[in-house]
Image (cartoon, rainbow, N blue to C red):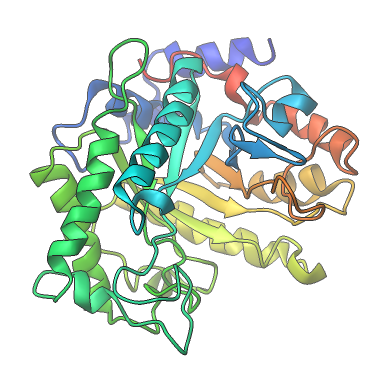
Amino acid sequence: MKRNFQLLVLMFCCVNSFAQQQVKLIDRKATAETKHLYANLHKLSANSILFGHQHATEYGHGWNGDENRSDVKSVTGSHPAVIGVDFSNLSGVSDEQLETNKNHLHKIITDTYNRGGVVTAAWHFINPVSAGGFYWVDSVSKPAVKYIIPGGSYYEQYKKILQNIASLALSLKGNDGKLVPVIFRPYHELDGYWFWWGKNYCTVDEFKSLWQFTVSYLRDTLQVHNFIYTFSPDCTFNSEAEYAERYPGNNWVDMVGIDDYADFGRYGRYNLDSAFERLKIVSNFAKKNHKLAALTETGLESIPLADWWTNKLLATLQRTNLQLCYVLVWRNDSQSPTHYYAPFPGQTSEKDFLKFFNHPYTLFETDLKNIYK
Protein backbone atom coordinates (compact mmCIF):
# COMPACT_ATOMS: atom_id res chain seq x y z
CA MET A 1 0.00 0.00 0.00
CA LYS A 2 1.49 3.34 -1.05
CA ARG A 3 2.09 6.22 1.35
CA ASN A 4 1.02 4.31 4.46
CA PHE A 5 3.47 6.16 6.66
CA GLN A 6 2.48 9.57 5.35
CA LEU A 7 -1.21 8.87 5.89
CA LEU A 8 -0.61 7.43 9.34
CA VAL A 9 1.16 10.60 10.35
CA LEU A 10 -1.54 12.84 8.88
CA MET A 11 -4.48 10.96 10.32
CA PHE A 12 -3.20 9.97 13.74
CA CYS A 13 -0.31 12.23 14.74
CA CYS A 14 -0.42 14.79 17.51
CA VAL A 15 -2.17 18.02 16.60
CA ASN A 16 0.16 20.29 14.66
CA SER A 17 -0.06 23.97 13.83
CA PHE A 18 -2.10 23.31 10.69
CA ALA A 19 -4.65 21.19 12.52
CA GLN A 20 -4.97 23.89 15.16
CA GLN A 21 -6.59 26.17 12.60
CA GLN A 22 -10.26 26.00 13.45
CA VAL A 23 -12.65 24.80 10.78
CA LYS A 24 -16.17 24.05 11.89
CA LEU A 25 -19.25 22.84 10.06
CA ILE A 26 -22.17 25.25 9.87
CA ASP A 27 -24.42 22.50 11.22
CA ARG A 28 -23.98 22.30 14.99
CA LYS A 29 -25.95 19.03 14.96
CA ALA A 30 -23.84 17.40 12.25
CA THR A 31 -23.32 13.68 12.70
CA ALA A 32 -20.05 12.48 14.18
CA GLU A 33 -19.06 10.91 10.85
CA THR A 34 -19.70 14.19 9.01
CA LYS A 35 -17.57 16.10 11.52
CA HIS A 36 -14.77 13.55 11.27
CA LEU A 37 -14.81 13.63 7.48
CA TYR A 38 -14.64 17.42 7.49
CA ALA A 39 -11.77 17.49 9.97
CA ASN A 40 -9.83 14.77 8.17
CA LEU A 41 -10.24 16.46 4.78
CA HIS A 42 -8.79 19.56 6.40
CA LYS A 43 -5.81 17.67 7.79
CA LEU A 44 -5.11 15.78 4.59
CA SER A 45 -5.21 18.94 2.47
CA ALA A 46 -2.05 20.17 4.21
CA ASN A 47 0.10 17.78 2.17
CA SER A 48 -2.13 15.92 -0.28
CA ILE A 49 -5.29 16.00 -2.36
CA LEU A 50 -8.06 13.44 -2.90
CA PHE A 51 -8.76 12.52 -6.52
CA GLY A 52 -12.38 12.33 -7.64
CA HIS A 53 -14.32 11.28 -10.74
CA GLN A 54 -17.96 12.02 -11.53
CA HIS A 55 -20.25 8.96 -11.88
CA ALA A 56 -17.14 6.78 -11.62
CA THR A 57 -18.81 3.61 -10.37
CA GLU A 58 -22.16 4.02 -12.18
CA TYR A 59 -20.81 3.76 -15.72
CA GLY A 60 -17.70 4.31 -17.80
CA HIS A 61 -16.20 4.15 -21.26
CA GLY A 62 -18.18 1.40 -23.02
CA TRP A 63 -19.92 -0.06 -19.96
CA ASN A 64 -22.84 0.68 -17.64
CA GLY A 65 -23.90 -0.70 -14.28
CA ASP A 66 -21.14 -3.24 -13.68
CA GLU A 67 -20.68 -4.11 -10.01
CA ASN A 68 -17.66 -2.59 -8.22
CA ARG A 69 -16.19 -1.25 -11.46
CA SER A 70 -14.70 2.08 -12.48
CA ASP A 71 -12.40 3.06 -15.31
CA VAL A 72 -10.02 4.49 -12.72
CA LYS A 73 -9.92 1.15 -10.90
CA SER A 74 -9.32 -0.68 -14.19
CA VAL A 75 -6.18 1.42 -14.67
CA THR A 76 -4.87 1.78 -11.10
CA GLY A 77 -6.47 -1.00 -9.05
CA SER A 78 -8.30 1.58 -6.91
CA HIS A 79 -11.49 3.54 -7.23
CA PRO A 80 -11.19 7.33 -6.95
CA ALA A 81 -11.16 8.67 -3.41
CA VAL A 82 -14.16 10.87 -4.24
CA ILE A 83 -17.14 9.59 -6.22
CA GLY A 84 -19.42 12.18 -7.80
CA VAL A 85 -23.18 11.61 -8.05
CA ASP A 86 -26.01 13.90 -9.16
CA PHE A 87 -29.38 14.75 -7.60
CA SER A 88 -30.78 15.78 -11.01
CA ASN A 89 -33.39 13.02 -11.12
CA LEU A 90 -34.94 13.76 -7.72
CA SER A 91 -37.52 16.08 -9.25
CA GLY A 92 -39.62 16.33 -12.38
CA VAL A 93 -40.34 12.58 -12.55
CA SER A 94 -43.20 10.28 -11.57
CA ASP A 95 -43.41 8.96 -8.00
CA GLU A 96 -42.49 5.49 -9.23
CA GLN A 97 -39.46 6.77 -11.12
CA LEU A 98 -38.48 8.90 -8.13
CA GLU A 99 -38.25 5.83 -5.91
CA THR A 100 -36.19 4.02 -8.54
CA ASN A 101 -33.84 6.98 -8.76
CA LYS A 102 -33.52 7.19 -4.97
CA ASN A 103 -32.70 3.49 -4.76
CA HIS A 104 -30.02 3.86 -7.43
CA LEU A 105 -28.38 6.77 -5.62
CA HIS A 106 -28.71 4.98 -2.30
CA LYS A 107 -26.66 2.04 -3.55
CA ILE A 108 -23.92 4.13 -5.16
CA ILE A 109 -23.55 6.36 -2.10
CA THR A 110 -23.66 3.66 0.57
CA ASP A 111 -21.37 1.34 -1.39
CA THR A 112 -18.80 4.14 -1.57
CA TYR A 113 -19.05 4.80 2.16
CA ASN A 114 -18.80 1.10 3.00
CA ARG A 115 -15.57 0.90 0.99
CA GLY A 116 -14.19 3.95 2.82
CA GLY A 117 -14.58 6.47 -0.01
CA VAL A 118 -16.11 9.94 -0.11
CA VAL A 119 -19.24 11.12 -1.97
CA THR A 120 -19.96 14.51 -3.49
CA ALA A 121 -23.36 15.35 -5.00
CA ALA A 122 -23.87 17.91 -7.74
CA TRP A 123 -27.38 19.04 -8.62
CA HIS A 124 -28.26 19.65 -12.25
CA PHE A 125 -31.66 20.85 -11.09
CA ILE A 126 -34.35 20.68 -13.79
CA ASN A 127 -36.08 24.06 -14.03
CA PRO A 128 -39.10 23.65 -11.72
CA VAL A 129 -41.19 26.43 -13.30
CA SER A 130 -40.62 26.06 -17.05
CA ALA A 131 -39.25 23.90 -19.82
CA GLY A 132 -35.60 24.02 -20.75
CA GLY A 133 -34.10 21.55 -18.29
CA PHE A 134 -31.20 22.70 -16.14
CA TYR A 135 -29.75 24.78 -18.97
CA TRP A 136 -31.06 28.21 -19.85
CA VAL A 137 -32.90 28.08 -23.18
CA ASP A 138 -33.86 31.55 -24.40
CA SER A 139 -37.12 30.57 -26.03
CA VAL A 140 -38.65 28.64 -23.12
CA SER A 141 -36.76 29.07 -19.85
CA LYS A 142 -38.01 31.23 -17.00
CA PRO A 143 -35.80 32.79 -14.29
CA ALA A 144 -36.96 30.32 -11.67
CA VAL A 145 -34.99 31.60 -8.67
CA LYS A 146 -37.40 34.45 -7.91
CA TYR A 147 -40.33 32.01 -8.10
CA ILE A 148 -38.97 29.37 -5.67
CA ILE A 149 -37.55 31.52 -2.88
CA PRO A 150 -39.79 32.47 0.08
CA GLY A 151 -42.67 34.55 -1.21
CA GLY A 152 -42.45 33.12 -4.72
CA SER A 153 -45.34 31.38 -6.47
CA TYR A 154 -43.43 28.04 -6.65
CA TYR A 155 -42.10 28.17 -3.09
CA GLU A 156 -44.25 25.29 -1.84
CA GLN A 157 -43.29 23.14 -4.83
CA TYR A 158 -39.61 23.81 -4.13
CA LYS A 159 -40.06 22.69 -0.53
CA LYS A 160 -41.46 19.38 -1.80
CA ILE A 161 -38.39 18.91 -4.01
CA LEU A 162 -36.13 19.54 -1.01
CA GLN A 163 -38.19 17.00 0.93
CA ASN A 164 -37.24 14.41 -1.71
CA ILE A 165 -33.57 15.22 -1.20
CA ALA A 166 -33.96 15.04 2.57
CA SER A 167 -35.74 11.70 2.30
CA LEU A 168 -32.76 10.28 0.43
CA ALA A 169 -30.22 11.87 2.77
CA LEU A 170 -31.90 10.44 5.86
CA SER A 171 -32.03 6.95 4.35
CA LEU A 172 -28.30 6.76 3.61
CA LYS A 173 -27.12 4.32 6.25
CA GLY A 174 -23.93 2.34 5.83
CA ASN A 175 -23.19 -1.15 7.04
CA ASP A 176 -22.24 0.38 10.38
CA GLY A 177 -25.73 1.84 10.78
CA LYS A 178 -24.44 5.42 10.51
CA LEU A 179 -25.70 8.08 8.14
CA VAL A 180 -23.37 8.62 5.18
CA PRO A 181 -21.90 12.14 4.90
CA VAL A 182 -22.33 13.80 1.50
CA ILE A 183 -20.53 16.86 0.15
CA PHE A 184 -23.57 18.63 -1.32
CA ARG A 185 -22.79 21.11 -4.11
CA PRO A 186 -25.98 22.82 -5.26
CA TYR A 187 -26.23 25.68 -7.76
CA HIS A 188 -22.72 25.22 -9.10
CA GLU A 189 -21.23 27.53 -11.74
CA LEU A 190 -23.60 30.21 -10.48
CA ASP A 191 -21.48 32.96 -12.06
CA GLY A 192 -22.13 31.60 -15.55
CA TYR A 193 -25.00 32.15 -17.95
CA TRP A 194 -25.73 28.53 -18.97
CA PHE A 195 -27.85 27.39 -15.98
CA TRP A 196 -31.17 28.96 -15.00
CA TRP A 197 -29.70 29.93 -11.61
CA GLY A 198 -26.86 31.81 -13.32
CA LYS A 199 -26.06 35.45 -12.65
CA ASN A 200 -27.95 36.67 -15.73
CA TYR A 201 -31.23 35.28 -14.42
CA CYS A 202 -31.36 36.32 -10.75
CA THR A 203 -30.09 39.15 -8.59
CA VAL A 204 -27.38 38.76 -5.97
CA ASP A 205 -29.98 39.01 -3.21
CA GLU A 206 -32.24 36.45 -4.87
CA PHE A 207 -29.40 33.96 -5.17
CA LYS A 208 -28.32 34.44 -1.56
CA SER A 209 -31.93 34.01 -0.44
CA LEU A 210 -32.18 30.78 -2.44
CA TRP A 211 -28.99 29.37 -0.95
CA GLN A 212 -29.79 30.36 2.62
CA PHE A 213 -33.33 29.00 2.46
CA THR A 214 -32.12 25.72 0.91
CA VAL A 215 -29.59 25.14 3.69
CA SER A 216 -31.93 26.24 6.45
CA TYR A 217 -34.82 24.10 5.25
CA LEU A 218 -32.72 20.97 4.83
CA ARG A 219 -30.72 21.42 8.03
CA ASP A 220 -33.12 23.06 10.47
CA THR A 221 -36.59 22.03 9.30
CA LEU A 222 -35.97 18.62 7.71
CA GLN A 223 -33.15 17.72 10.13
CA VAL A 224 -30.56 16.67 7.54
CA HIS A 225 -27.28 16.59 9.46
CA ASN A 226 -25.02 14.65 7.10
CA PHE A 227 -24.41 17.32 4.44
CA ILE A 228 -21.30 19.42 3.85
CA TYR A 229 -22.46 22.48 1.88
CA THR A 230 -20.18 23.57 -0.96
CA PHE A 231 -20.18 26.84 -2.90
CA SER A 232 -18.55 26.44 -6.34
CA PRO A 233 -18.59 29.17 -8.99
CA ASP A 234 -17.06 28.70 -12.41
CA CYS A 235 -13.75 30.33 -13.39
CA THR A 236 -15.08 33.72 -14.52
CA PHE A 237 -13.49 35.66 -11.63
CA ASN A 238 -10.11 37.35 -11.34
CA SER A 239 -10.30 38.71 -7.80
CA GLU A 240 -11.62 37.72 -4.40
CA ALA A 241 -14.31 40.38 -4.66
CA GLU A 242 -15.59 38.88 -7.91
CA TYR A 243 -15.41 35.37 -6.46
CA ALA A 244 -17.40 36.35 -3.36
CA GLU A 245 -20.03 38.49 -5.09
CA ARG A 246 -22.76 35.88 -4.56
CA TYR A 247 -21.22 34.14 -1.55
CA PRO A 248 -24.13 33.61 0.85
CA GLY A 249 -22.05 34.08 4.02
CA ASN A 250 -19.91 32.07 6.40
CA ASN A 251 -22.93 30.80 8.32
CA TRP A 252 -24.20 29.07 5.18
CA VAL A 253 -21.15 27.43 3.56
CA ASP A 254 -18.72 24.71 4.66
CA MET A 255 -16.51 24.41 1.59
CA VAL A 256 -15.61 26.72 -1.28
CA GLY A 257 -14.55 25.56 -4.72
CA ILE A 258 -14.10 26.37 -8.37
CA ASP A 259 -15.10 24.60 -11.58
CA ASP A 260 -12.36 25.20 -14.14
CA TYR A 261 -12.16 23.49 -17.50
CA ALA A 262 -11.24 26.57 -19.52
CA ASP A 263 -7.71 26.96 -18.15
CA PHE A 264 -6.79 23.26 -18.41
CA GLY A 265 -6.96 22.74 -22.16
CA ARG A 266 -10.57 23.13 -23.24
CA TYR A 267 -10.67 24.01 -26.93
CA GLY A 268 -6.92 23.44 -27.03
CA ARG A 269 -6.11 26.47 -24.88
CA TYR A 270 -4.03 26.32 -21.71
CA ASN A 271 -3.68 29.09 -19.19
CA LEU A 272 -2.16 27.37 -16.19
CA ASP A 273 -0.99 30.62 -14.65
CA SER A 274 -4.59 31.84 -14.57
CA ALA A 275 -5.72 28.49 -13.19
CA PHE A 276 -3.21 28.78 -10.37
CA GLU A 277 -4.13 32.39 -9.60
CA ARG A 278 -7.81 31.49 -9.37
CA LEU A 279 -7.09 28.44 -7.23
CA LYS A 280 -5.00 30.65 -4.97
CA ILE A 281 -7.91 33.06 -4.58
CA VAL A 282 -10.18 30.15 -3.56
CA SER A 283 -7.58 28.59 -1.26
CA ASN A 284 -6.81 31.89 0.46
CA PHE A 285 -10.51 32.71 0.80
CA ALA A 286 -11.04 29.35 2.49
CA LYS A 287 -8.17 29.90 4.91
CA LYS A 288 -9.31 33.40 5.80
CA ASN A 289 -12.89 32.26 6.40
CA HIS A 290 -12.03 28.92 8.07
CA LYS A 291 -13.50 26.78 5.29
CA LEU A 292 -12.26 23.91 3.16
CA ALA A 293 -11.37 24.45 -0.51
CA ALA A 294 -11.49 22.19 -3.56
CA LEU A 295 -11.14 22.09 -7.33
CA THR A 296 -14.71 20.87 -7.59
CA GLU A 297 -14.73 20.20 -11.36
CA THR A 298 -12.06 20.15 -14.03
CA GLY A 299 -10.69 17.94 -16.76
CA LEU A 300 -9.85 17.68 -20.44
CA GLU A 301 -12.31 15.86 -22.67
CA SER A 302 -10.76 12.82 -24.40
CA ILE A 303 -7.40 13.59 -22.68
CA PRO A 304 -5.43 13.75 -25.95
CA LEU A 305 -2.28 15.00 -24.19
CA ALA A 306 -0.25 12.00 -22.97
CA ASP A 307 1.23 13.83 -19.95
CA TRP A 308 -1.78 15.98 -19.01
CA TRP A 309 -2.10 14.49 -15.53
CA THR A 310 1.41 15.26 -14.30
CA ASN A 311 2.50 18.12 -16.56
CA LYS A 312 -0.73 20.15 -16.47
CA LEU A 313 -3.00 19.18 -13.57
CA LEU A 314 -0.54 18.00 -10.93
CA ALA A 315 2.01 20.69 -11.77
CA THR A 316 -0.64 23.36 -11.19
CA LEU A 317 -2.02 21.82 -8.00
CA GLN A 318 1.43 21.59 -6.46
CA ARG A 319 2.41 25.18 -6.94
CA THR A 320 3.10 27.20 -3.82
CA ASN A 321 0.67 27.47 -0.93
CA LEU A 322 -2.45 25.89 -2.39
CA GLN A 323 -4.54 24.01 0.16
CA LEU A 324 -7.22 21.95 -1.60
CA CYS A 325 -8.92 18.86 -0.20
CA TYR A 326 -10.02 17.28 -3.49
CA VAL A 327 -9.99 17.59 -7.27
CA LEU A 328 -12.74 16.02 -9.38
CA VAL A 329 -12.75 15.38 -13.12
CA TRP A 330 -15.96 14.94 -15.08
CA ARG A 331 -17.63 11.74 -16.21
CA ASN A 332 -16.84 9.02 -18.75
CA ASP A 333 -19.89 8.57 -20.95
CA SER A 334 -20.86 4.95 -21.56
CA GLN A 335 -21.76 5.42 -25.23
CA SER A 336 -19.83 8.37 -26.62
CA PRO A 337 -16.40 7.44 -28.02
CA THR A 338 -14.96 10.86 -27.11
CA HIS A 339 -16.78 12.13 -24.00
CA TYR A 340 -14.53 10.98 -21.16
CA TYR A 341 -12.33 12.72 -18.61
CA ALA A 342 -10.53 9.83 -16.87
CA PRO A 343 -8.37 7.23 -18.63
CA PHE A 344 -9.27 3.60 -19.24
CA PRO A 345 -6.98 0.73 -20.25
CA GLY A 346 -5.26 1.61 -23.52
CA GLN A 347 -6.14 5.32 -23.43
CA THR A 348 -3.39 7.78 -24.43
CA SER A 349 -2.77 9.16 -20.94
CA GLU A 350 -2.93 5.82 -19.08
CA LYS A 351 0.80 5.64 -18.24
CA ASP A 352 0.90 9.24 -17.07
CA PHE A 353 -2.19 8.67 -14.94
CA LEU A 354 -0.37 5.85 -13.19
CA LYS A 355 2.40 8.32 -12.36
CA PHE A 356 -0.28 10.68 -11.06
CA PHE A 357 -1.77 7.83 -9.02
CA ASN A 358 1.58 6.84 -7.51
CA HIS A 359 2.59 10.39 -6.63
CA PRO A 360 2.71 10.99 -2.84
CA TYR A 361 0.51 14.07 -3.21
CA THR A 362 -2.52 12.29 -4.70
CA LEU A 363 -4.87 10.09 -2.70
CA PHE A 364 -7.25 7.46 -4.07
CA GLU A 365 -9.81 5.29 -2.27
CA THR A 366 -7.28 2.63 -1.36
CA ASP A 367 -5.21 5.29 0.44
CA LEU A 368 -7.97 6.44 2.77
CA LYS A 369 -7.88 5.08 6.30
CA ASN A 370 -10.59 5.78 8.84
CA ILE A 371 -11.60 9.06 7.23
CA TYR A 372 -14.92 8.92 9.11
CA LYS A 373 -13.33 8.46 12.52
